[in-house]
Image (cartoon, rainbow, N blue to C red):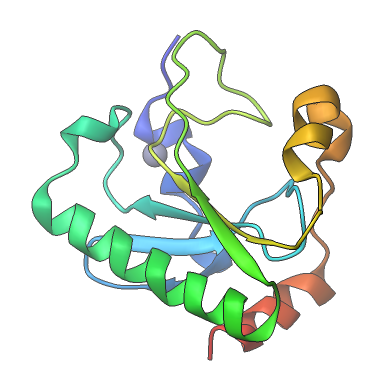
Length: 140
Ligand SMILES: [Zn+2]
């Protein structure tokens, strides 16, 4: 049921990484909920967030807070950080076992959660190359 590192998309995502450091990497979620929906993961394949080492946590949060500042200063009015641990769901397009943190811009009255809880599958949209280039520039 669990994915192995060899089949894990987050372990094989090098060309989509927009920012990284020693233990962590950041890239755009595909599919994504909103433009600027980033994922930050440890480089090591682990499935339980409590197995992260202190060095991994430090590098992950360094990237999360870097992205959050970019989103708030250049895109949104605020930002959310979210980590889901849902071993009861099967891995697939909308769920990966590799630990990851979501970072995305928020706007006053965007009703994101009201919409996403009701229509989660419909809300996700495929990334295109223009969006990838736009957000690569944001992180510079
Ligand atoms: Zn992985």
